[in-house]
Image (cartoon, rainbow, N blue to C red; front, side, top):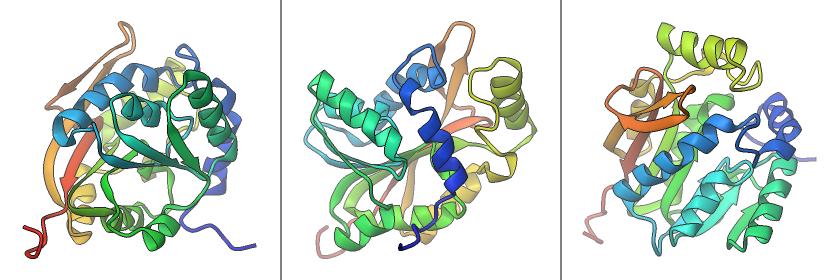
Length: 240
């Protein structure tokens, strides 16, 4: 059997185990449910959604993919967690939302369909793979000239460790213990360097603030914990 690229099997197993609870707004993925409308608003404001061909990398159970489809995008969601994909397919079917879900590595899509997408999203995934820089390079190959790449992840510093790991996982139980590993968290400067190496230009950077008591989320200028970044592939001279 061919080895799947750039995948941590323990991470796949972790998310597959939680798959039945993916769409429970009060369950293991409660923060994602609360953050999702804010993430969608940011993506729509930065890149648009209606009519765009979108690839959602690491789609999990489909929260973001369905949201983008509801706002008029033509969405393909890919993931390597089969149980999570099964939940995504079933929920989309029950909800009557048209999303194509595929169990395929992002590198395979990039080889088969280079520069084929108007928008590529990769939210809350980069901190779960062995080589996130390689994933960002692949995202850059997938997007057309003039197109958009949006990534979100968690900063790596003492504040992020205290709030996103100790607080969220071990004190408040907002996420299952062990969801994040501190060494895999990513500073915005690191993400932007990988994006530049992939031929992408930073177009927007914002913090994702979340109050677990009120369950309110908002976009802010504070990128010290959760943040979201928008990159664009420049137009080539021939297409400018």
